[in-house]
Image (cartoon, rainbow over all chains, first blue to last red; front, top):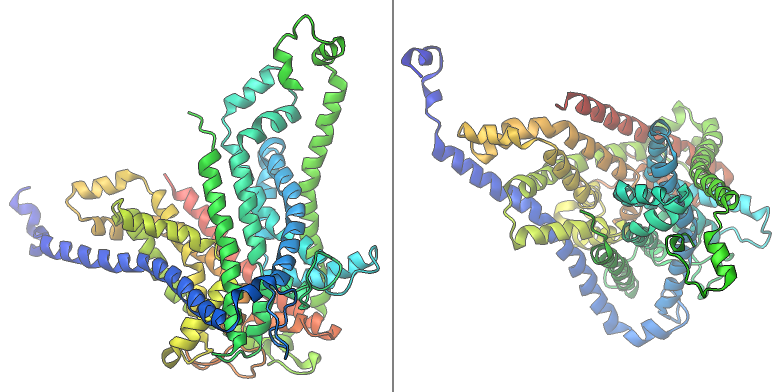
Length: 311
Length: 309
């Protein structure tokens, strides 16, 4: 570069101020690193508050009572804290939702990846995405005021609040999750496997059922476990449609209370800090957190352990 | 059954096994194929039907009571005079604050993890953390907000305030923003970065003046999608104590507030039918807001894809 090039450029332009640039970079790196660390503080915050209040809870109520009592009446004069009353409702609704979401989601995934033409696929995928994006309070409205009256025309002994419609609508809510994750898994099965099956004279169904699905099983199972975890933690549908009546057992026709519905019931009223009700909140929250955490970890582990590698 | 086709049965195999193994039986197999195909399409169409059913129900229930009065009135004990203005204003406040908190922090964290971080224990720990946080139920975030923002930080946040609510939701959507940012940054070709380094720019200079502008549409798309998750968020807001009956607009960060999903939840849980209709009207307003946000995200995504080399 000759001197006359610099003529119409400010004199400082050729002085890159390297030290300043490096300083700025270090400062930016520290700030952004701190932002990234916020996720760690969030985890610490969640664990800290849950553990702290749960310990306080177990100082008042023994863990044996928590695990063995058969009624859940923390707000009554004769308090009982049988967590399995809430767990049974949560598990029942999650099972119903999975019974809906597994066939619907898996078959939709097969349809999208194997049967639909690219044009139809381009229409169907956004529809599934809309289904995933509907706010849960809207699903709650649908379950309580549309699905329950509709089901009552066939099932006269279905009560106004029940686990059945909550579970069915929850199943619809998690279907897109199962469908899109399973589709990714089906999509990543190499073409050569499919072609091999066709070359042996297998029909399309035989190829899908005995070659593609087994090859993608790790992804499918992990999507299912993530969906279960979502169903366990879902709040608004079950609060609105399943009621707030803690009952032990697995009758889908009567009102029940899930762990999440209990948390909403207590926090929607005013639970003053330090009361047993306030601490119960966090003990239930801890149980819920442990359940979803175990499911998420299991899902990650399953993918790692059983993923078929094709190279 | 199909697996045995390739191997010849031994000479002493039972006659029946030999015959059935080698029978091509095409009619039955094609029949099964048609049933399976019908089931696959059926499952997909059921989802579409349910979505239409849901949308139609809400439109039919809610359009009758959706009018300008409904938009501009405060909640009331009488359904015909109740409106959604307080909830609408609360939601606008929430979304504004959440964008203000989550956008810089999420994008900053994304840039750090994608562009700056070395592959050490800290980075791995953060990544595992973000993955786990995305799977934590929103009601648990609500409990975190209740214990930390509402109680411990009460002198700053004012307790059950719009600030506590927006901080809680910001934490909730942070993993989504971070993941979206990282994906957008990853889509930028390395040649751009290498060219910058070759000219003597520092990492940050390259990111700020080249990588980030190129990735911005993708990042914004992710941010809008995260906000559309946030706008329907109900459970965590109930836990941090969004009030249900508020007849004033939020006046500041420490003001009490309500939000659209909370107001809708409250109306649904009342026994009278009239409140259910206005709940449906509220849902229409909420879904319309969602539609606008998603439309914007799709528009940005399409423009981005066209510009990509």
